[in-house]
Image (cartoon, rainbow, N blue to C red):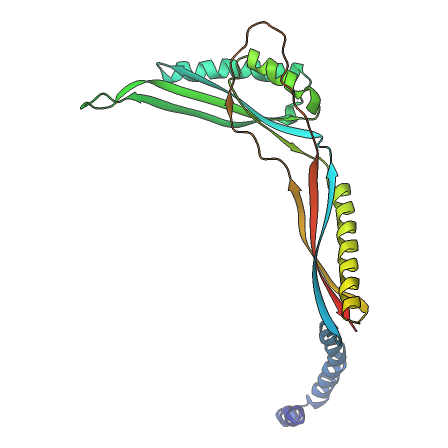
Length: 259
């Protein structure tokens, strides 16, 4: 009824102006557009569940041998002046980076992660603090693709002046294929669990209503805390580094309809 009243009102406004035919044509064009808009609105409506709704959380898990190790290597120097402390760390870090490149580590796998300079004070009793020197540090984050030889490289870095080492943090460099396998396992787990619930309830699984992935999850071991390293003379040694295994998980929230 409201639509008819609107048309009559517009016709009255157009009467006597010679625009009635144009107005009617515009109204007919608008009427032709309405059905497609209505169809689009109906398509956006989610279908309802007529049976029993079942929500399942499922996890798919796979293991892989890590092929990438990330380690932090740094140098720390102390000196009476700020410039001397910075210069000493710069010289040592230059040698450290050169050793990494000689070992085959690419420029893209070496990234400066921290440069710092801090004053050091002595606190005599009943006196003002006294400046006694400066501590400078410089560290790089290094990615090793050859994990089993990374221990030898770290030992070479210590020989070149690196006195702080932390890590390694192991990871899978290209995890997508492993995560896809975990996704397939998660779907299989969710379907099997839904079938179990349906049988227990005397029902059957009609369809999967929705699947929501909460993202891939890596479960690496916790990184080791920074360790101060000292040169150990001329004897032959090598720091062992074992890649072990890493778990990759995908979690799914699945909704099923049972009847």
